[in-house]
Each structure stands twice: as structure tokens, then as C-alpha cells.
Image 1 (cartoon, rainbow, N blue to C red):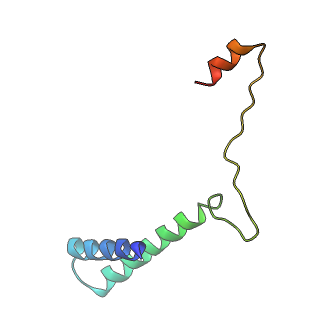
Image 2 (image 1 turned 135 degrees about the vertical axis):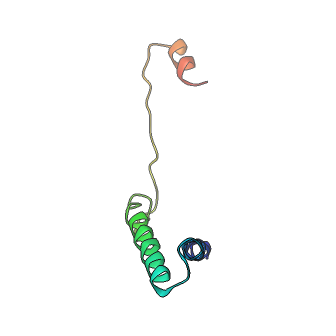
Image 3 (image 1 turned 120 degrees about the vertical axis):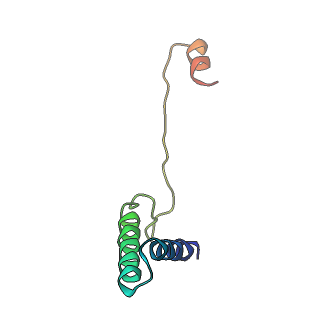
Length: 75
């Protein structure tokens, strides 16, 4: 629901700046739609696909010679 408010605000803002006409409303809607499509397609890694269950964020392994090495990495 929130994206619709953003689209509406963009269209109203464009109409306030450039005047109310069919061209301005259509061009603003087209520009916001293309921008939204580009943003949606650029989030391919964040979108869960059917069958995916988990996400690996990062895994680190520290190897050292003793307790002093561990205390340096785990603060």
C-alpha cells in the first residue's frame, strides 16, 4: 500500500511543478513505473524463490595457536 502513496506523491509533485495535463500525469506515471521496475529487478538476491528455506549471511572461521588469538577476534 505504501508504494501507491509514493507513486501518488510523485505524480502530484510533477503536476505541481509542470502543470496539470494528461501528458504530465502520463509521463510521471511512466517514469515512476520504469524506476520501480528497475528497482524490483535489481533485488534478485533479496527475493525468495519458491523452495528456498534459508539465507546464508556470512560464516567466518578463525584458526590460531591459543587463547590469546581467540580473545583478539571475539570481543
